[in-house]
Amino acid sequence: MANRRQIYHYYFDLQLIELTLILQHYNSRIKPFAIIMVKELISAKVYTIIKTKNMNMKILNSKLCMSLTMVGLLFVSCNDNETIEMITAESLTEEEVITLIESDVVSDEMDNLIDDFLYGEIEIAGKTEDSSKDETQNRGRIPDCAVKTVIEEGNLKTVIIDFGEGCEGRNENILSGKVIITYEKNEELMSITISKTFEDFFFNDIEVTGEKNIVRKRENDNGKPESTTTMNITHTWPDGEFNSKVGFKTREWAEGSETKPWSDNIFLISGEWTNNLKNGDVYSSIIIEELRRELVCKFMVSGIIEISKPEVSCILNFGDGFCDDKATLTNSDGEEKEITIKRRNRK
Image (cartoon, rainbow, N blue to C red; front, side, top):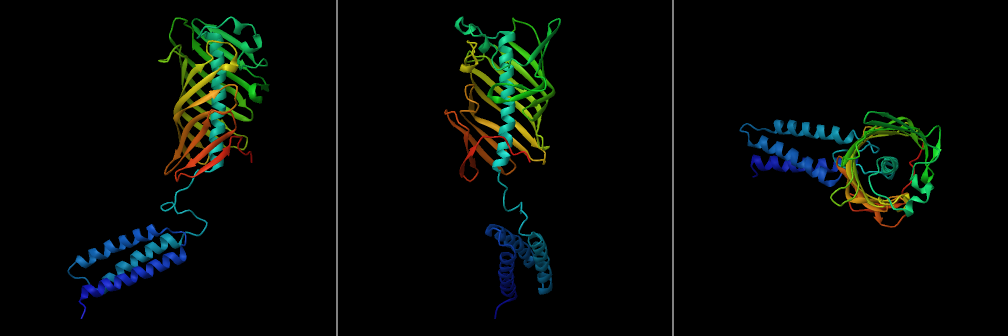
């Protein structure tokens, strides 16, 4: 004849079988490992009861029923359209990635603008005689329709670049409003700190607000001009979506700094920053392989960014040097998808 302990274990096993059937019937999306975790939880509670001296069937039943009731409320209350956060992780969508890419494009194009300004105003690098013959190329990426106003107070210099109500730059981007650049003049310094702010400024239809502070070196360890930008800016789309970016980027002017034509300029970019979107999601972006930007191409031609938010990450690869609008998105499961770099949907 079986002893009392064997009877209780037999009863417990039957209850676990019943629990498994219930969970699988009402929650087909629940992964097996979650059911195993629930079993282990209840098993631990029942084992503790068995260890007590005055255990009886009524106590076992009540404890087990309480556990079953709590588990039932936890799982059955979730309908088929809800996400169970403790079991399945949300994936980054292509639209989310496109939003972050477009925000990065705006930042990058504005950094190009400032690099051209620094080239002309601060004369960081020397210039060849041949490159000075074409005055249209000497203006770099600052369009002719922009009006530049210079205000000097002692060694402090403020430059206002006014794009008016609409001024077309390179890559068919429409700029409007003002960019205000402030720095201290000192031609003997090996580095200079520049502040950049915006006034009613729009890049295409995206409003840009906030501030960037730039430390510009005449030469880095590679003998190249380099800018490190600390940013706290917000990009706002017409539909109300926004991305608040906080972090830093370092841009090495790898090629073209010794000539005036913009077409031979190549930049290598590193850095990391956070992205805060309207829905409250916070994404981290880290450049794990330097981005290469050739100004003859409107897209990044190579480099890798890791984009992540809690429990979810993906890798964005811009390719191996070919100029196109394609990038490869790899999720945390190793699944790859080719995406087209474009503007996000304006809903």
